[in-house]
Length: 458
Image 1: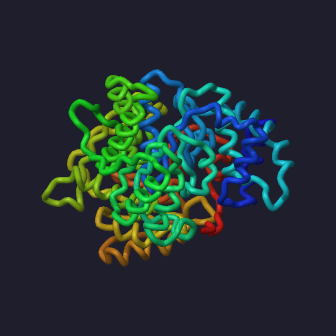
Image 2: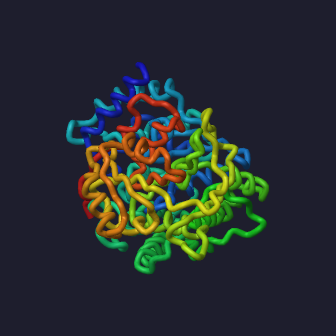
Image 3: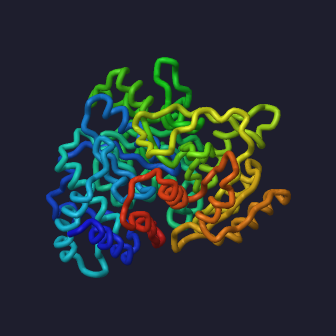
């Protein structure tokens, strides 16, 4: 099997949508000899910050000398980003091998119970990590937690980053309902760590933890001490994610000892593309990419920009500090930007999925922008660019917001602007990284992110 053929096969699994429940994944794992039984996990759920927290945990434990598997979603460009060992992407050959091994197993399922794309990929990751003899797997949920395919494992610790309104059509329309889905990863007697601070969500997590006899750590301070490390990832919210990762490491010290030097090194070298990632083009233009795909993410982005802005005009100029990361592999012609002292307000290129609360995101980001170009996202679920532009104009009638045909057209329109912010959907960020030559190449990989989901049964 060739790699493009393997990607095409995975793409075909999108026809089965997304079924929430563990029965199919458990059967698929059993047919493969239950590879999850050979592994140790840290299971991470939450609305925002899951990927960054996973990246920090992976970096710390790798610095401690462990062989660490990392499973995350969605990917930005390459499908191979989802499954990594010691931050090396799974090879094309391994993807082909795993697809060939799993294909015969799918015949064991009736058509109405055919494994979905995410269920198959979850098993691929488990098989790969077991074969690689990983010492630890940092394991991110896909959607929700309670009925997510990743929830067939019993981890060393369950981590819940935060609870905010997102995916309401599938997870519920209140923080309590969403928290109940996220808290579904809590296992009997397994310690739980969370930075959730919304009272109604925290109450749910506390109740579930109590019912399952799971020790709960909460109220974690986002302040990093001088003794911790320099954090590579930018943004105030990343300090909260780092504090969560550190609390998790501390709780697991008796099972996986980690020296302070490894914590320093892990946080100082962590890399997580597409989240407040600054790149510089050959002509000097600075482009900031951030997947602020919901209101909470947009608020974190606005806070990250405004926190470094001159006090005199916090909404119209920014100064962002980025520490270089040795984990980043920059392609020729691109370099990581340093500080952007007194930079003008950014031109924003924005695209979103129609099932997101994009009106709220536009209202949050509008005060930051000098001008806005809205674009469709490469997804069947894309919001209309004209509707997005109209939402920006409603938020700020003086703001020039123009709908463009595609991202390439928008990039051309702002080619002479010194500072550009590309944000909204992670799909858009992935497309931008690919177009700017700042990502691994892949054969049709980005389209594998597109899916639809039914309502979760309660």
